[in-house]
Image (cartoon, rainbow, N blue to C red):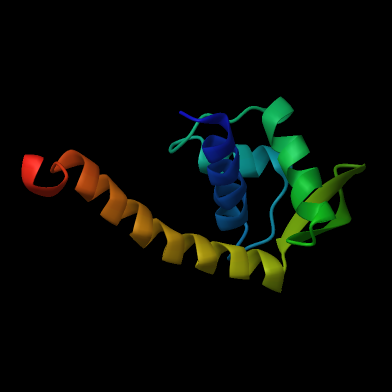
Length: 106
């Protein structure tokens, strides 16, 4: 799979994992893993990038004597999910065109 496409899809997966409830890194990995393989070394740069682009915010909560970072989606993040859904319909149309053949020669 094209690396840029996969990168964009992973961003959307992370946003989708926190769209209904704030979460932390390990839980995000558990929530995403049935659908796509993601490691900590992949997840944390994504989280930093999404925070830098203001698609999520971060706050800390004490858990078992340690601070745990929680991630919360922002309105920009929700808008990115909506935009992805709209774009996905176009991708499905392109997929259909490719798999069913193109034009008269298909």
